[in-house]
Length: 528
Image 1 (cartoon, helix red, strand yellow):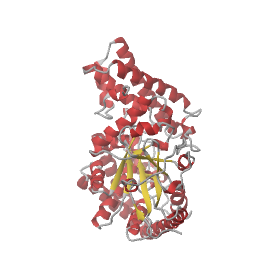
Image 2 (tube, helix red, strand yellow):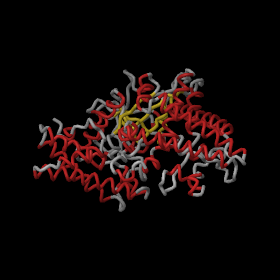
Image 3 (cartoon, one colour):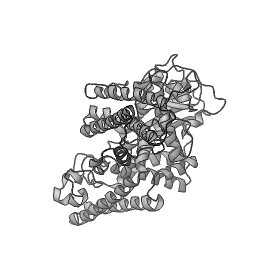
Image 4 (cartoon, one colour):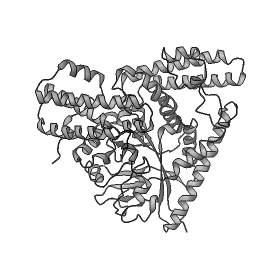
């Protein structure tokens, strides 16, 4: 029987990541209009606005959040901020024209007016409240204790591919921590494994940097040796002291396959950016020919031409939040009973883009989860660190290799569509370790070259490029970025070998590749 005094907790863990697309100038800002700006508008700004409302109302919410270094680099980039504001203004201008187009259809006209109002609120929040800088606002909520920020690898590298090169794994972790300190001025306690990719030995790389915990995919946790006595409902510990949590595998399916498909919710696939005649979109597309997403979607998911209703969708989001909490409370209560009344938890991990961008009402749903959990006594929202208080004894286990990609082992990152990438990136990594050793005390022009080589290699190691090739989405662009990064690294390698460096090339490449200005190539050096 479950102990009424035992704690039943859920950890809401959002992972926000964006591949670094500042490498190739010819498609900037076009690629941002396709992949970054809509997510900022639909997810990141609404997430911060939600936190502001909760804080103002005194709701004690807890959110665990991963903001990848490459996403942070883009959000902190003055050019991205400038281009985003121009894009937002064009989007509002498109809305003004929508008012004219829909004035003969009252319900569409009313909806278009509401969309414009919301876009203007987001613009005001971005410019006035955040001064164009979103990261300091996230850092503010972290300092207040509402948000728990986890570090992650510098470029979302799939670390199991490099486990035989410990220096390379260390460099990804170290650069990720340097990024965290640069953007948030804090030292994280947790580390997020990109794509939840784990292989034996990675816990040693993570723990050596003083990090306390990470999260594993459920099968990597449940197939541990010995079997975890608490299942995925309690953390465990590796032999070196690193705590590990098991992800709840049911959460994404519960949310995305049950709640997000409600017929009252907005149809995210019917967008005027793909439905209106091309001439009506010219001003928004800014002379471009490729159609893009806009914020103007008028229909629900009921497979009929039913106009979207904000009020009805908000009520449904509140009901779905209650259903979510009821289901979690019931499951945790049963788990606690099986575990003789122990405290239990459920790690609910989601890609941040699923809330707002993919599921329009997702942020409203999340806000209701926090508001309702705050007044319930059978379940509470918590942070990872709250379950690792001094004196808490955790079972020691050896986790099993796993990933949240492919069928659970990351095989889609190494198939016939993208397998050729790893051999180039791996060879470059071996060479970078060698360079860091041979030129460990250099300065001036050579140091600049080596720092650039380190950045090029980190980008080439990103898991984004093989994922995009496997999915066939922006595959040409992903391949081009990868090849450009390998070529940039090879240019430095050859230049150092011949002791002939082109200052003009170096200066131009540095200008077009502003990622991680604080980078130090010595992170690839062998650790004593």
